[in-house]
Image (cartoon, rainbow over all chains, first blue to last red):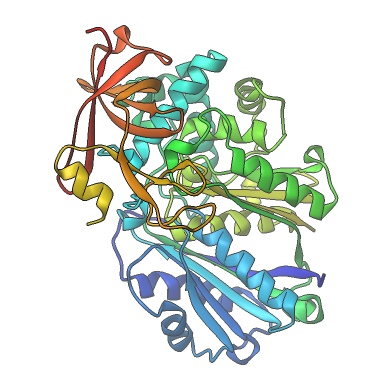
Length: 368
Length: 109
């Protein structure tokens, strides 16, 4: 298969402000043009937009607003993992030889409609994400004796990391005690255990090996991809394992020809605190039933290996942008350009992005 | 409105079923997800089992499973500390008012 790299990127600030979706997409795309050497519109032959917004024809609209006349342009929607799904589409277009350079831009607004899957009738009236998250959390507590303190450590760590992320939705640190005593959403969920819907955009520029060095001296290669969809209905899920993530990760590791222990830095889908505890186990960073201890050790040693930009809890969750923002972070880490967030000697990175209570997942492995 | 929702509106909890494969087709659909034959419809047993539960304010909610396959979320008419996974429940009421709504009660209560 052809080698394909991330050769440019851009981010808007994640905010509470509701903005026209086109403005978010364009602002993020402008950052790519501002920061990528030798980039001109005629060199981009694919434009893919990732969003849950209901606006139509955004691939073409973003192309026109950016002065690009691509061979391929369209929108990808896949709920919370729209961003990684759009990147996988862009990767595939280049791998097929149809195009050489693809811009992938994702954006969503605060309170967008992607938070509720109306089709899933099995959820009854309990259709908001807090309800599946409560089921996951209660089941995790029951099976592994997970405590509220262990859940709060995830949030404390990720809010702390977000302090050094200039694009994060919030820069407020919280103590474990403050998180444990924050407002009860349900018996099993505090408000500070939840990621926040917000407005924001993120972009990456993908390029074939043939053209990558034109745009950057440090291309970051996408070496592994795994994606798995088990269902759309939440209630079919196992409650203590992100089974689609397990399968996606296994495929990504196999394609990248590496082991989980070789991953130096990862952005994982902490939609709620319990998701990070499950993900570090299901991505095989640590054994089952040791996720809480693993995250506690990271927190106590100030190791930023997991969610250095603050994850979804710290940085915010503009759905269509999230998977792309995760890739931007790992790209910066592998280029040694993550400033205060930098992990030392990072050579392999991973992103984990999932949708609708892990009914589907994407895992990408990147290398410098 | 599909068959599942129109039946729910009259208080009936139904599932699609494939007579060719002799299996329940859930979530409700027009065709079997195995052989793509047209489904038939029938009422579901109202006796189920709690899979997991939690509480929001005074509202206890849970996932309950029926016929070893069909899982739905609904409101449980019980104190949270009186219920646990594995406990038998009865579907006491269901309705459709823009959203599916399911109500469970503990068996033997």
